[in-house]
Image 1 (cartoon, rainbow, N blue to C red):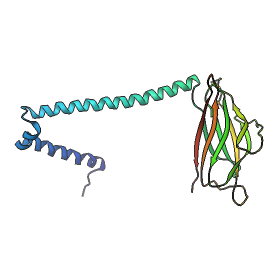
Image 2 (image 1 turned 135 degrees about the vertical axis):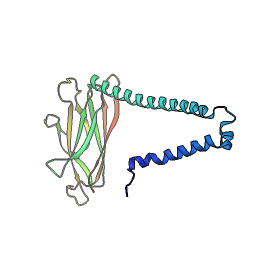
Image 3 (image 1 turned 90 degrees about the horizontal axis):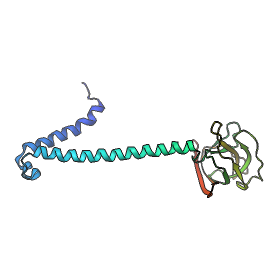
Image 4 (image 1 turned 45 degrees about the vertical axis):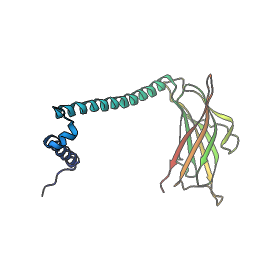
Length: 214
């Protein structure tokens, strides 16, 4: 027994319904009386109405597509002009399983200040272990507090031929048993409070979520 492919079956049902509905409308005098309302050419009237709705749908679809294209074009333009937003991510350390690393990248031409890292997780309390710039130079930090005073400075990305400026913050967490956490099969929510310097300083938050395998 031969089966009809799924991609045909998906269209076959609606097509059958449309054909039967058309036959009922065109071939049934009672249906014509209620639906066509005495119109001499019922089929032409319905086709004309449907074409108008089809044109409206096509116009709305065009607007949606154009909005997406304009948003992507603005994103690319901001990147070329050095106005792209900063980003943050968080991952376990590649070599030390007792650490997680927060990386903040400044894609903007203006200087970015990092004031605080808010960490939300059920594994324990986080503290700063080490801070390095993107080129590997260690940055001095006042203790393990995730609130930085003075704030960490990430210079703007002015030389577009080089890699963007960034900073890597290694953190450790102490569990309820007073031991360092080494099992990151959990969810960590990160909220980095930053300020982008300019004629009018822009204070905002960068957010990231790490979801380890349960």
